[in-house]
Structure formats: C-alpha cells, structure tokens
Length: 79
Length: 432
Picture 1 (cartoon, rainbow over the protein chains, first blue to last red):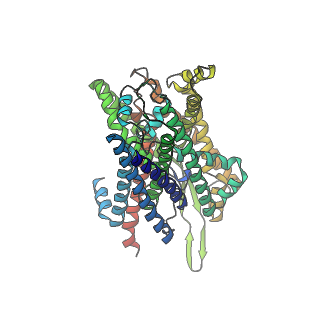
Picture 2: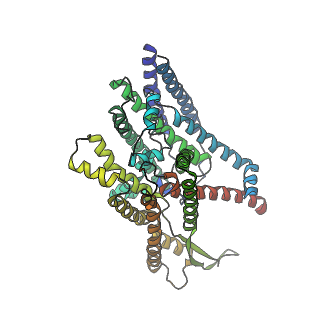
Picture 3: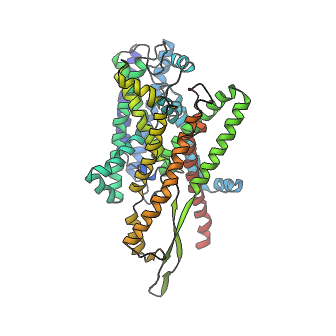
C-alpha cells in the first residue's frame, strides 16, 4: 500500500511539473486561426536554446510520468 | 499520386517531418489506451460492452478517439484546447483588450495563444473533475453496476483528475510539436487521428448487422466524402489587376492574379463550435444530478436525443450562425481592400478602398450562404438516418457528418502542405 501511495504522490508531483513545463513553452499552436486551413505559419523562428532544453526536460518528466502511471496500473492489478 | 509519395519520402527534409509526425501520433495512440491510475480497466470494459445510447457523450468520445469512455490518461483529448480557442476567439469580439492584442500582429497573437493555453489547463481541470465525478457516481455509462473506480476515496479521485489534466497538457505539447516540426497543423491532425482510429471498430459494428447494410453505408460514405471534397475545393476567383511600377530600372507588377474566396471559407470550425455548445446543457444536467426536474427532462428529450427535431434544427441554425460569425472574424474585408490598395492592385471595374471592401463583403456574404447551408446539411445528415439504421446507439459517426467534414478538411490541408513543401524543393535548384 505504501508503494501505491508513494507512486501516487510522485504522479501528482510529476503531473504538476509537466503542466508547468508545457505552459512554459512558447505557444506555437497559433490558436484557432490556423486550425483547419488558412493562416500562414511563419517558419522564421528557429527553436532557441531555451526551448531545446525545455523540450528535453519535458521529455524527461514525461517519461517519469508515464512510468508512474503504468507502475500504478500494474500495482493495482497485482494487489 | 504514387510518385508524389515517393518523392515526398525521397526528400530528406520532408521525410524527417513525416516520420516525426508519425512518431508523435504513435505515442499519442499508445497513451490513449493506458487507463488512468485507480480506474478498474476490466470493469470499464464490461461497462463499455453494454453501453446504451450516450447521446452527446458519444460525440465527445469520438473526438477523443474512444479514449474518453475508457477513462485513459488522454481521456480529454484536444477538446479542452478547442473549447479554449473558441472562448478566446469569441472574447476578442467582446473584450477590447483582446481585440487590440489580435491587431498587434505576431506578439499579440502569441499572447493570445498563451491565454488559450492557460485556459486549456483550467478547462481540462474542470472537465476532468466532471468526468471523474460522473464515473464515480456511475452516471458515465448509464446503467452499469460495476464500480469504475473501485476504492474511491478523495485522494484517488484527485490523482485521476491531476493525471488527466497533465495528459491534456501533453497532448497540447504534442500538437504544438507537430505544428512546429512536423507536417500540417498539429491540433487538427490529432483530431483527425482520433476520428480515424474509430473507423475500424465502427465499421465492424456495422458489418455485424449484415453485409448489405455495410455495403450501403460504404457507398453512402464514399458519396459524402466525394461531395465534401467537391465543395471544399470550390472557390470563386475574384480577378485582381496590379498596376505596373518602376522601381529603379526594373519593372514590377503589371500582373493579373485572383483573390480566391472559398465556398466554405470557415472550414469545419462552425461544426465543432456548434457541437461543443450543444454538449454543454447535457453536461450541466449530468453534473447537477438526475432529480427529474422539468428542464432536465426537456434536455434529455429534445437536446440530447439526436433524432429529435429540436436538436436537429438548433444544431443546423447554430452552424449557419457560426459560419457567418467565424468568417467575419477571420476574413477582414477592410484589411484585404487596404492591402490591395497599398500594393497597387484593384478589382477591374471597382474603385480601390471602400467600394472594393464593400464589393468583397457582398460577394463573401453571398458565397457563404450556400457554404453554410452545405455545412449544416452535411453535419445534420446522419441524424435523419438514425431511424433507418435503428438502435440509436449506432450513429455511424465516423461515416457521416461532422467526422467526414473534419477528416476531409484536415486531409486536404495536410496534403496541400506536403505539396507546397515538395514544390519548394523542386523549384530551389531551378532558381539558383
């Protein structure tokens, strides 16, 4: 049971971190105006160093998050 | 067609983009099948088998690629992002500050996008709470006795809500990654994938009813797709003549081009707007809880039921309204006229400036009428066949209406982007 609790807390922490990290990214979705045609995206802006590092950290936290989710699922199944 | 595919894969730049997009999509689909922690997967599966008519939830389920009713980590899909975009887009009309930001150009747009992202997270929390509450109370699957969340203390529920919210954030990130480094618009592509993922399952369900029904549905689907492509490609070309100018020793301009006005300038956005608006009353009524009040009966009988005339006509009218609304927001006639004037262009027979913008407005509003009618009819079409295919549960969703509109729209858009990329390649050696 403690393992489940630890994983749950880890999951909450990584989830909050993930949300924060994704929000830190510069939005490039372009909103609705570019959804479904129309709207030209300017491809001028190359990804900066900050963005690259942010990508890397997000990926890292994301994998921990997935491990937590899968681990919790397995634990619940075993018990 | 096939040669285009080969050359697309032969171009290293394009190949990398396509493979990147496919990779993200694969990760996304895998994630959509992972159940949230605390949700009993066997129970959910048992409930899914005898799920009855879910009305509007079915549509949401379609948009999330079946992930919603499985309560997976990506259960919410991109719906929160779309709702947030709609709200921000509507607010640009109401709040002057947003309108200012929109006019500011790149930096203002960036700020608006950032607002959209914050709002997405807020909406995700809201929707996740709603869905988890519904699942916990056993309302998600109508009359299913198995507990979906076995040991539901408040902590487990919070974990699920937080996980789903994080899942939504990840989807948002995926969409942006595809837009930036992949092919096509990430958000719409993810939506496309969600709907496409449902096709095999729904097709099998129809096949179970008999080969003849299946064949008829297939023929109908092909007809609808063909007609949608036909209308999507339709456009009116307004001729624009550019005056000749001497800059230094070189002559510029003097060309005659055209300004294309599509019959369906708004794409599928009106349909998405309308369907997500229609979903709201159902959601509210479910959240309040079923105590059989009069208004709740009204909602259940007329708005949720897809074959009731109230639902059909409200949906239809909403689509027409949103088509006009969205076009006035996105296609600014005055701006177009000003731009044309600035670069020495004019429409033959019409003065530059205000008369031009008036003319554009006239043509646009006239061409939008058939466009909006077409959108409404295509979206409403399957609702009429509910009686024919009986058992309201099977609405053949991937084969009619909204789903086809979205799939064809996104497909055409993506193909166009790939094509333009190819074009760039071929012309590069040419010009240098």
